[in-house]
Amino acid sequence: MSDKKIATRDSYGAALVELAQEDENIVVLDADLAAATKTGMFKKAFPERFIDCGIAEANMLGVAAGLATTGKKVFASSFAMFAAGRAFEIIRNSIGYPHLKVNICATHAGISVGEDGATHQCNEDIALMRTIPGMTIINPSDDVETKACMKALLSYDGPAYVRLGRLAVPVINDHEDYNFEIGKGIELVSGNDITIVATGLMVAEALKAAETLKQDGINARVINIHTIKPLDKEIILKAAKETGVIVTAEEHNIIGGLGSAVSEVVCENSPIPVLKVGVNDVFGMSGPAVELLVKYGLTADNIVATCKKALTMK
Picture 1 (cartoon, rainbow, N blue to C red):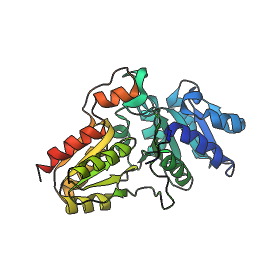
Picture 2: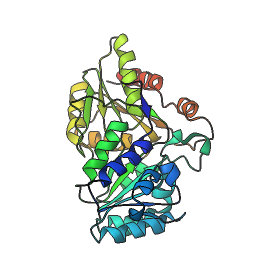
Picture 3: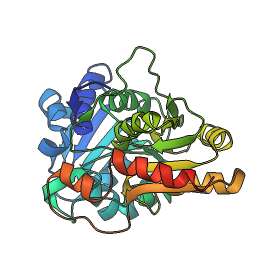
Picture 4: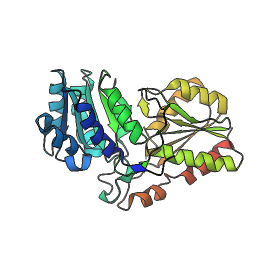
């Protein structure tokens, strides 16, 4: 894991500029948050292809749907709370139902929004988007994965929701054999005692947890699930059969997110204990992001403790 830290929203803004230099069909929409979502980078480079729709996410995504019908490759951004929450009906009816190629890139997801407080900390967006048929959900773990995801979406058919963060996170995928494929999980660490399935910024914490467990003689497998829907059932069920117990880790409500998705697959195909590390069905509060992650148990230490509890259930 690199010492370098980059917020995935910054990676998103940089990727838009790079990709747009070779693809003139890319159009970017924002809801008066370009400085925060980092689409301002694109606005500066390609002002003729940038549309600020104002503080009106539902209208923005309606515009996105219209542009998609003309063949434009649309990336629409706002904070996750407002993109997924405020505009849910438009996403469902105008983008999901006609299965339009619109990329909803929602920044400031999770509790690590920090001082903006509970109203802006979105721990429900994955659950909301999972209920829309045909919606692809991607939650990148770092800078490398975010840029790879953006590139892959250019040739991907159908609506996609990309979850991005405000907090700078470690770069963990900066190696030559890294390969991103929508819908495919990545085994980062091998192990046969227990499996940790993590997504987003919790992948780095899962790697730290695996190191701690190894010192205690526990070999934990670590799987990075960047695509929560469609979920890579093959890698999940293989882990279930080979390790016999799973702990999930996500910066999201424990209801409806990665843990729920993994539980559903395991319960229906290869029942074993699945324990969840996430926000325990409560609202957040204002505070420094790093302190909030500790307060709500989104840490390597809590993953270690949960793994040890899970091992008693095998």
